[in-house]
Length: 357
Image (cartoon, rainbow, N blue to C red; front, side, top):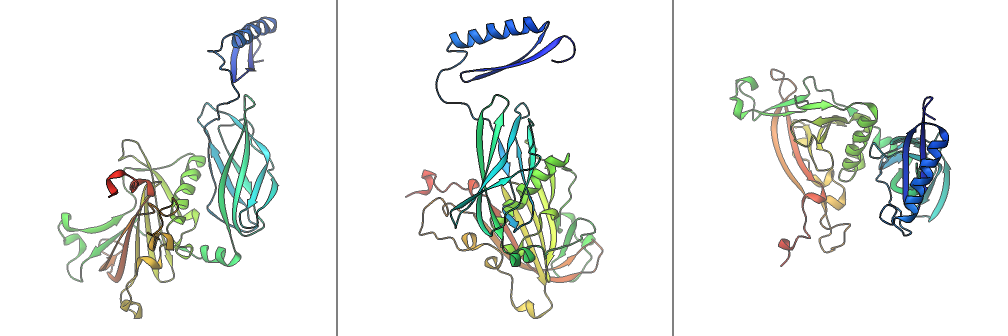
């Protein structure tokens, strides 16, 4: 009942779930519901016959890498008009051991278009998590997602990244020690700018968490674990420069004596800037892509043609030396630079007939 004169009614007949609000008495609402039910039974166009049920659209996301015995989020979302509940148990299958355990989900969300679950796993290695959902119309369906549980040592390595604070959210470059950066003609200046006017911070929190996790998962597909930032370091934005208002992310952090900046169009491509001091023993060794990229990306097995390798992640690399400044008038520091551009596999379709002989 809604208020004093309206009733919300939901009924299911065959493969159709019907919901309506009726203003009037309860008896009249039931009479109308019976007439609607009779129409659904008699008209195959209104209620198609068959055993197939339309499965709701739903996206589910979890960190690609998680720590053993520590909680991590599983988040999901549907179109705004679709409400689902979560069955308070999920299945976790250890891929290597071929064992499956059931994990209880306390305070499982009820009838919401989006939600957040907390989970933890006690064994290391690759796992497939399966979550069961129920719609308002009692349609039961499942979604699965893969995570890898790190060893304690791997988790320590991942957590050792330190924030690299950039005073102006940018870095500036001189080809050599000489004139001030501001004295260089504007069209010839070299710089990397992180915070641009057309990037708007994402709000509210569920939206921000979703895209931060998406951006970080993208990085885990091509950067080695020892060069990844933490999830919390990712800053996510709406890209107002694109008509489709796509999502973008960036982060700046340090690993040992290396400074790293990541710029990402989430789900599409990423640019990675890596610098190391240019006046040290390390000066004799220029950073190379294979040091930072996972083997599947740095050294793909082109002899194979299965979907795991082909077409793969296309990337480009460039090395150079510059004088780097943190502000336009700051003190220059000699650095060696590795620039990487990594594209998502869907950007290059090597299965297209034009690539074949």
